Image: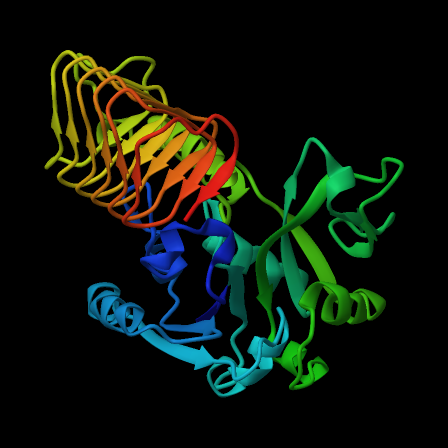
Length: 362
C-alpha cells in the first residue's frame, strides 16, 4: 500500500520553532511529528510513502533516510515548484500513487490522532466506492465544513456544508483519507483543493463515504493547538501505555512524559500534562504544568512554567514565570524573576524585562 503526507510549506504558524527545524521534525511527545505518522502507516502495511513539500530541507532528507531502513518503507519527496493546494500534490505524485491498483492513504502532516489505518482500509474495501474520508466529531461545528450523510445509505456523504449557521451535523473532515487511484484522474496539474473541488465531484457520483474516528483528534499546526494536542496525546498514552509515563514523586496530577536523560530536582513539581525532552535540567522548587520542554532546555530554581513551549537550548531563570501560550525559540534566555505572558520569542534572544501581553520578540 501507499501513503501521501501533505507537508506543505515553511510551517509559519508554528514559528519560532520552525525557524530552527522543519515542522515535521519538531518533536511532539518527544518524537518528530512526522514519525508518529510514518510509524502508523508502516504498521498498517504501507511500503511507499510520499512527502508532498514546497521545499526540501536537507536535514529532513537525512532524518527520513534513517526511518526508511528502520521501518522498511520507501520515502520519496514530491517537491512542488509552486504551492499546489491539497489536491495538486496527488497529481504530482501520480507515478507512485498509480503504480498499482491498491488504494492509497492521504494525510495532513499537522493531524495527530490514533491513526485508524487498518480499520479504514477494511471499511473502504467493504463499501467499494472510490474514496473514504475520516470524520471526527466536534463541539462547535459552525467553525468547520460539516459532513452531511445520505438519508438511505449509511456513511455515504450527501454534501458538505461550510461553517453552518444552523445545526446540520457535528462530523467534520479530519484530514485523513483513503482513495482509489482513479481519483487522481479527476485532478488537474494546478493549484487545486481536494476539499472544495475533488470531493464534491465524488459526492455527485455517490462515490464518497465517511469513517468515524474514535478517540482524540487535533490539528497541532499552531502553538495553542500544539499544547492542547499534547494534553490529548498524553491522556491517550495514560490509557494505552501508562508505563511510558513517569510516576516519580515530583509528578503532580499525572500525564507527564520524561526522557530518561533529563535531570529533575526531587523538590520540583511537574504536571499535569507535561513533556520533558532529552537532557533537560529542572531546578529545585520549579513548577511546570501543561508545557513542552524541548531538548537541552533548562528551568532554574523556583521558576513557574505554564502553557509554554520551551525551545531547544533555552533557559528560564530563577523565580521567572511564563504562561499564556508563550513559545521560546532555540537558545532563548529568560532572565531571573522575569514574567512572560503569551510571547513568541525568536531564537537567540535574551529577555530582561517583563512581557505582560501577547507579543513577538524579535
